[in-house]
Length: 311
Ligand code: ATP
Image (cartoon, rainbow, N blue to C red; front, side):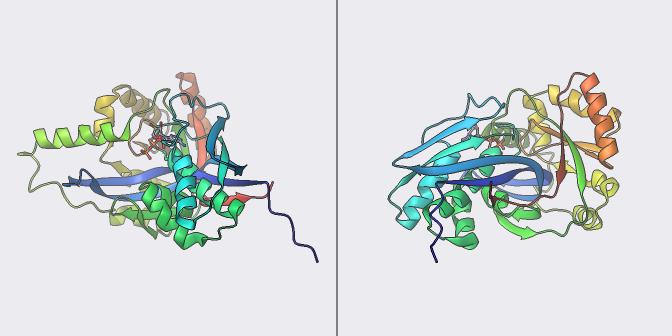
């Protein structure tokens, strides 16, 4: 019996996410915030193909403008590959080709999905065999949203968003996304939130509350009921994102006036996510938003986390 030769290219795919609910706790001394987030992985994927190389390099393909994304060590996928090599003592490198579909700096965790897919792809390419648990620990070191991009589905994140517990979700939720042409910087959105809270601290009584995902969110997910979930969508980063990018307000108004059950800014924005009742409603909303001049993406969730794809 002959063993199959090791693969020359490994293809891994990881999803982008929507934050169905996001509460942000007070600013801590280390400059970070604790959050409580209900994540849902949606059917918009990053495809990473890893091949053997002496060093580490990355290239993007696809139609999304990636001109603002670094291609050096600052790239999250390169950082993921380097971290895996350092942790396992692997001496070679990898070339990463990323077919990008998640909007850049859009609040949908595209970079995190790249990192998660890269961990999985390089682990298989190099035969380092770390397995899910150890990859999850590495993922958390790369960024708060990276572990969720590995696990996918619907989950609650606490701590920095990286301490995950699965949430029961029934059925399929239909979303219509409106990506923006230009991204928003996540640190700038958090800074705008902190600045607002500092300015109004005498009005925030007794203080910024400890973040939690409400029972209403969990119940709506468990019931698989988009009408119920529409009542519970919420995001503490929405108001600061709107202050930095006032045009989001118009998108939200148009979507809600055109038949969406509810709209919410995803994560730190500026992507807006509209929840609709079913695929027919998604198509209707797409038509209405297109008529108003907006580009949309129709996605469903939950979907699986990072996986190897056998081409
Ligand atoms: P966050 O996870 O911070 O909420 P986001 O989902 O809003 O991020 P990303 O597309 O992940 O947006 O990009 C965030 C920042 O990370 C951008 O400024 C981008 O230049 C940088 N970045 C580094 N590596 C990548 C990558 N592989 N893909 C996308 N962005 C990357």
